[in-house]
Image 1 (cartoon, rainbow, N blue to C red):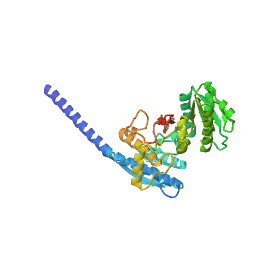
Image 2 (image 1 turned 135 degrees about the vertical axis):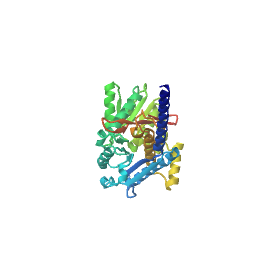
Image 3 (image 1 turned 60 degrees about the vertical axis):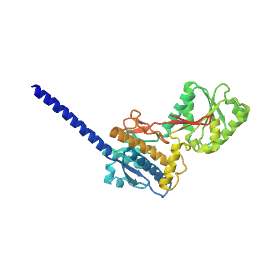
Image 4 (image 1 turned 135 degrees about the horizontal axis):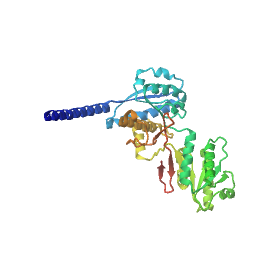
Length: 382
């Protein structure tokens, strides 16, 4: 009996060891298997959309190349899907159904077909740009990077109230009939009223005396314009210069819009002077060594420079591909991009952090403030 007990104990131990070896071998084999990535975007040279998406796709390729050094290989299939294309023709390709991740589409009208396809085949779908995707609320396979304007404005207002609740808001009417920033200023004013925070209204056309009366001598003033255009921003900065001349002790900060990131070459010195905060979903630090290395590598690989636009599309593709491919390798199909699933990916330009939308898919909730400090440094506050 003792002999049999010892025999079975030894046999059980041997079996467990054998199973452990087999599991280890299967894990190593799984890690050696390439991830299958599909890209369905307008990849052509016929118009601006095509040229922009070609640059984005090149960033995806650069990410896949970088991942090779970590032992992660990627099997890439790319399909050209211009605006007038029927995705059903593309989705008949057997390679599409074998993907672990599909990036696309660019056009909102193509989302429905891709949504149905990934739901049928259990594939993750990364929508890199479109903000119109009703299927997001019902399809758990969908990941949307950009927030709609309403969500982004609400996040910006929340950021403002958290950081500037003890400051004096000065809202400047810029007389821009084309402005689309009214939803932000309306929401901000409503929240200020609810909290009992007083604010002053003034106008770019106000006299120097009337303009000055809108500012507090006891509190830090935060200036908010009701337009994102550079013309009115330039006038507002000039009026602030005049105000500072007559009231040099005045504390002034500014709370702007993502468009202002494109004006830094023109207004950088004044952004520093007026302690500017800009809400955004990205920040392209063109002076960082990481960004410069990417630009040099892009030039070496593709014999041309990235387009001078914000965000840099190649870096956008690089960041998104790195985040998802590393996440899929680390967590498998369970990866969803939440904070509870950290990866070692450090974004160059676009931080990503996803949250569930109702009972459906996932939306990136990252919202940063780009802060141009008075000591002439730039920080990002997430």
